[in-house]
Length: 283
Image (cartoon, rainbow, N blue to C red; front, side, top):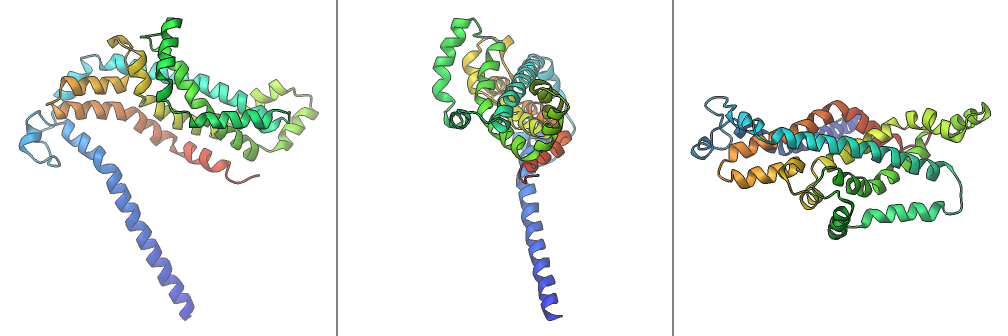
């Protein structure tokens, strides 16, 4: 009885400590977002005369109206277009590369896989000048279509790495063997069996790379110049330069830029967790 009481006491202490740490982490995580939303409804000088965490006198939507009446919608549509096209190409290429690496046995499988993994260590910034010259040569400079290639190229290694591990551990070989007995070819098996069963892994890759592409600044700044070709990160940079003293308006821009990814993550968080844990245990 004494040992049982001690065990229960230790368990309660551990749960209490875990709850306190989780609450502290939640507070630290949500505080910046609360700061942005709260101050985005304030006037330009209201934030200076009051505390930054004080409630505004009234909900002032003038900051949001001013932003939406400008070029923000165009920046948003550019980001959405680049994101959808890049993710579609990335997921298809990653799945096509991961399937043979995970399932086929051929001579150069290990060197190819090692080379793909090694590409994850290449810094993005050392490729800016070559890609800039390449985009000028191909006529894609100052176009949103010129961003798709670099986005896909730099996201492919980590995507192939994650998806190969997922296919090895989470898709039983017995399913493929049964399909082969029924006369199913490799191409049909890939599209009819492997891709549907890889949805958790593909969802994880899409969310992980989607957030990075949505917030990417270096390539967007280097490969675009005109206002019509800019994406949301450049919009934030532009508003920050134009409205340096109007902090509430900049907060409103940040809220509008963050909102799509936040809503997307809320609806797809179960798929992200499922994809991250599905390949952890074999079988």
